[in-house]
Amino acid sequence: MSIIVTGSIAWDYLMRFPGYFKDHILPEHVSHLSVSFLVDEKERHRGGCAPNIAYNLALLGNHPKLMGAAGLDFADYQQWLESQGVDTSLTAVYEDEFTATFTVITDQDQNQIASFHSGAMRRARELSFFDLDRQSIDWVIISPNDPQAMIRYAEQCRELGIKYVYDPSQQLARLSADELMRSMEGADVLTVNDYELEMTKKLSGLDEDGLLEHVGALVVTRGSEGASVYTPEGSYHAPAAKARAIVEPTGVGDAFRAGLLTGLSREFDWPTTLRLGNVAAVYVIEQVGTQNHRYTPDEFISRYRQNYGDEPRLVQLFNANKATSQE
Image (cartoon, rainbow, N blue to C red; front, top):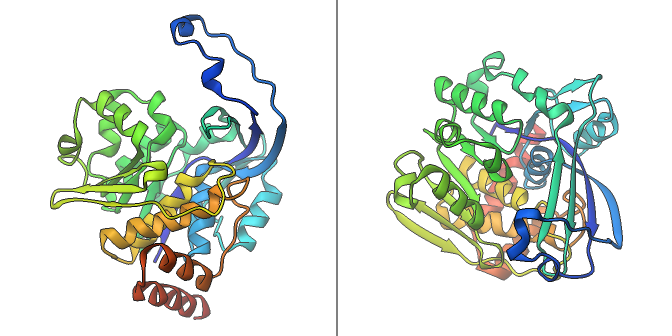
């Protein structure tokens, strides 16, 4: 299956605060907030929503294409992605820009405060699906990116009849109500976390049923509680997979989306698709970094069975992808 992943490409700077944000943020004074956190750790990792999703798709046996904008410091990152099975032929590299930078501080409760410098990402609006072979595209995910690029991609997917997952995530803060509605209108799936769902409802003025009048399905991740899906036919909830350790949550949602896309592209039912996402996600939270985890097909299937029981289609999935890669 041909899956194109759009979204930010970035270097991640991850820091750990050995306390709790709630002890230092006074709600009654948020109108003139001024806080500083002394962190114990700082690490640089490969990141960005699109490569995170693409990397996890590759782990799941897919052959994703990364479509995004990167800068002059992307060469080593690009080479590494290719070595992991991610096709970067649709990625534009701008030698007069730096690759985007994501900086996040995580406290002891796994709460996060983050900032994002767009860098080359702002040029993502220059890329177009009209330049590609429509018949070669099965699914697209529109993940957080330059806001204008996200709007442009959604319009193009609708015009070309391409199935797409709309994942506004942290860019909800940058979108107007009109931009949100224009982008999600006609999406096969809208995916958000539980906090982003409330933001989406407030921005759109719609509840879950109202949102389903504009999208095919609504998928909501709920952290340690798992994930839910709402469709015109009904809803379903999949409890989270069990983590062996909770180390760092950055990139968990991106891994879930890789499982989501894998299930959608293989036309699995919703329970299996959500469970795929949950198992893919749990690997990320167990270590620092969004692309430092690995697993074999056998390891993934074993982890799935430990949490949800047997699912014969997973063996078929990995076998089918293995056969395709050998052709």
